[in-house]
Length: 327
Image: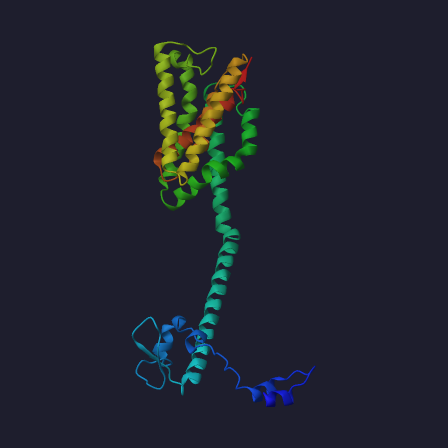
């Protein structure tokens, strides 16, 4: 107490050195453990193989706490080995970056080559003129054979203007697949299908089929025409579900099919209640077949695509784009 009283007076505070001299040595600082500052759990296995870490060396040993094996570190060579390890890792990263850049450049080159490929442009022109010539020849032949006054009417000319769109949406994939896999499609199957579709006009000269009209006011309500109508609906059902089964997005297309069917049903019901007469022209049925049937690997789908195009062109070349409902 005497020592304290001599060195401490009122309004005077002792500094840290004086307190140390008076009482005791300071409390030692608590250092972090070697295992916590050096994460042993994340050490790469390559470091063991390269000689940085070795269980055979006994310079420094410490238990990891999770495994019974000892872990030893060669202090003498660790600096040089780590430096080499870091340099080799950076080289690998550089190589990976170079490979990644090369892959991106190759993808860009493929895209540029695809759009600048003259052969692709020529094949597209071949497919388009093949599509257009078949359409025009069929129209000219059927109108000439049946004595129609206008061999190429205005509605057929309108199709010529719209033919690039129809070619891109409805025929291009089939043409390219035929060139690559099965040339019989463009040589025999598709032309015969289109000609068969144009021949639907010949049914007008058969009395039984000439009376079969999909019209809510003129439909003949007898057993044979009802059976024919049911057979037609069954055929459309089979065609649609064949396309649905072979499509890539089955669930999505099924939802579109159900949604479209509901819209058609409610539209027909609304127009009938309003006193409209519904007339489903065969050009409209052919257009649906031509747009829906696009499974290039299915012969049935290709045939229905050509049939639909022939029926569509035959209908507009004689009757034009007639309205689907009227009063």
